[in-house]
Image 1 (cartoon, rainbow, N blue to C red):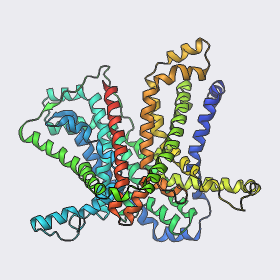
Image 2 (tube, rainbow, N blue to C red):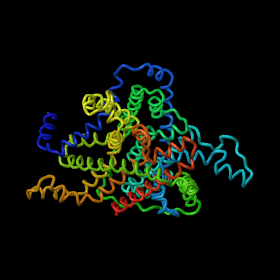
Image 3 (cartoon, helix red, strand yellow):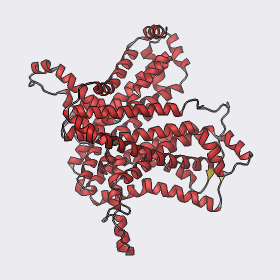
Image 4 (tube, one colour):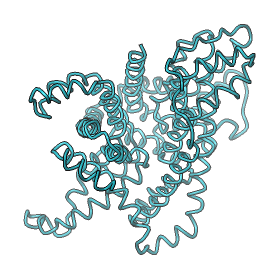
Length: 550
């Protein structure tokens, strides 16, 4: 019955908008399906070696990194969110948005910056020796280990939990917390008995984002020598030249991701996500005094300095030292490559997102909900998985078109699409369509359907209604979607390393390449440009959020 209903609705709304959306969903699912299908094919000889001697360590490394990073990032994010929302203390207004700034610092850049700063010749130990005569024992503060990877990822990823939890508490908590205060609950009791229970959905949502980011990470784990499934995909691909085993490792990582999804559903079962009250009033923060006020100020300052200020100041100093030596035509070419591929992919993402969001809005059914979930599925899948799936798909297409290539003068077995920029752009679109789609979808929710229905009643076509009525109302939303997607793409490392054409470098790959070659100061210039672009986007995003709240 349901299938018949879906079929009837689909026929009624079948048009060019719906067809393009369905094609987009199929393209997004294709690499994921290819990866999962690999588990049912015959393995190569290398896979027996990987399974016998390496797979357990890879899985153990991934789970260890994900567990401890998620625990610490969630703890820091929730505590900071409650302090900023629930209490008034010196510089509270500054820390409200400044604690988001670590989002602008890519973790792999923070990794090589902290490793250099904490090394024997780095600024910390050199200052202690030369200025204070203190020599630290080896490995006292150095971060080149799994502990260092947890430290870096924790401070780079806690803003996901902080942002979502802060937003939730500001909108949902006032009546609950005021009632608890009237009942005489103290600060600690209030946090454990009221704040944590009501904020559970937001905390879990932020926690899931942290887990996905850790499982996707390649730069930090690889630089610190931590064995994870994500790094093993690179080692198998480029070390053994065995794409099949890389696909199998990606399939194992996909199984873990699916397990995380199931865990999320289990944790969020039977939870209420909105207040039962029809009126949400703002929460008035409680004024802190004396030692409590200074303690909160010191805590927020310490986290801001460690997560953002110290590494960024160090990178700026390095960039100033070598600015003239590295600001050459080659660097301009590097910037051109980065902007070119990022803008192309972002434009495609925004166009696909508009089309799909409009189809979902028009259909308004379970089918539409399923379509929206399919379109955004790529964001939860690590870049390495998408990369190997896309590579397998493009190689298959090239093999299918071999006769056509020979007709055009190519040699037998030539790989045309598999060595093109199109493969990288496809990977970006699949991985990062979710930020663009979610932003545009939320923009559509603020526009009444009556405008579109009135236009159609007056005889305007669907396309003309979109151009004349909906597009002008979505201008701000489209800008936000473009910025968010562009920044995600420009920082992306694993997908770019795996799918880029030969000798095609971006700011992200060049910064990482310099860092791996121990040319840390050379890596500072592309790094600072990435941080500036990301920083501007975070500030614009924060500004848009404040405008929406007002």
